[in-house]
Amino acid sequence: MQRVLIVDDERKLVDGLVSYFTQAGYATLTAYDGRTALELALREHPDLIVLDLMLPELDGLEVCRRIRRHSAVPIMMLTARVEETDLLIGLELGADDYLVKPFSPREVIARARALLRRSSGAYAADERVVAIGAVQLDIGRHQVQVQGQPLELTPTEFALLVALMRNAGRPLSRSQLLDATQGQAFEGYERTIDAHIKNLRRKLEADPAHPMYIVTVFGVGYKFREA
Image 1 (cartoon, rainbow, N blue to C red):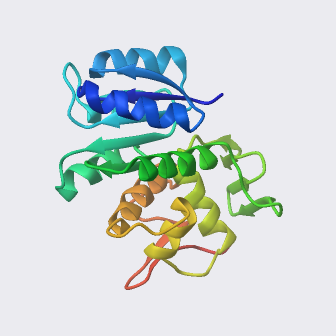
Image 2: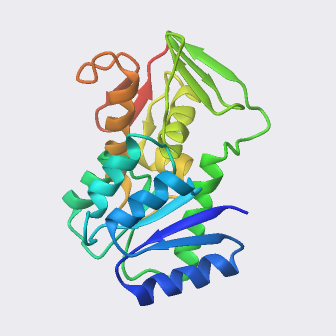
Image 3: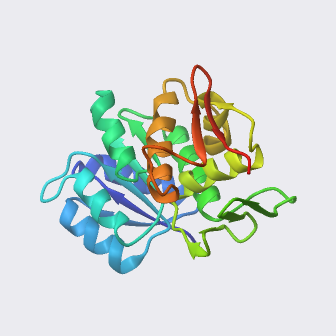
């Protein structure tokens, strides 16, 4: 059974999320402050972390930053903030997705399932190895190597790379990339693709400021440069 770590200082909200996830067939762990959340994440290795942005002890951004030093576990942020800058900072620190409060039980479970599918490497039957330049993508094994060295990507980063490399040379819009990573395009989320691309370039490119592989197609989106 997959386990979800739920982190929020609002106990009533945590109780509600525990009920949603339990009914959906998941086991749950809970924390009400950032320090406890970090300890549980590193000790228990949950399959998914649902992480509030505003927490006592350590805030959600710092918890996300520290987890990403050790793990690519899927992270979905919860926030009452609506400022785009705050959300993009969280994504640039390595969060995979976010939900703005209030949200529906159906939405949180649907988004969690999409993240867990991506992290488990559930791709289509035509999975194969794609190699372009020094980048080798093994879709079936959910592995990436650059110049023979393994690269650790979050589930969303991996899904983005799959979409880009499967369509090498072809520009993909932000909406198309959202479709590939989320399963459906959520209104207002296109800017999140830019944050994930920035993270992917930081890991993949020798010089992220002058990318060799993932290039911007102005007015359209991004493409993976053909060899």
